[in-house]
Length: 152
Image 1 (cartoon, one colour):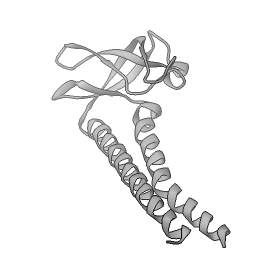
Image 2 (image 1 turned 135 degrees about the horizontal axis):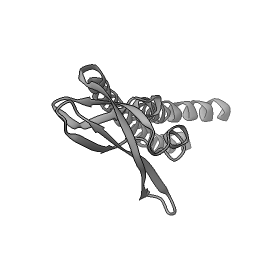
Image 3 (image 1 turned 30 degrees about the vertical axis):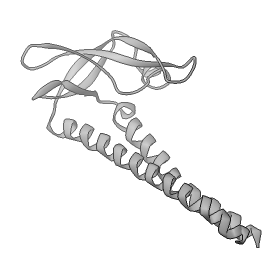
């Protein structure tokens, strides 16, 4: 068996695995995007207050995830407290401080389902998943093409 054939036995399953992972990331990015857009389209906009930034241990060693904790009053008069979606240590926390007013959009049928109406909160998750997913889809075929192109 030629070396090229042996290489393909390893490369094709790896490319397929990357393709499945890329498609899954793009799908979940789209799911998050549609969910947020549904809240924005059908939701109610109110003013909320950033109460604090909550810190959690991240999945990596010495990693800290920081998310904003926001309170707002629903039209029903109920006070709702929710956590934002973005690790805001570098994004939202530098733009908004504790006690600051922010625009919140919430689902009137489920007031706990809310988003802070900022670019970072709305776009960070979907864009990150879409970009990584596209990298997983396009990276392996490009690498294989370059490998075989320069091997000749």
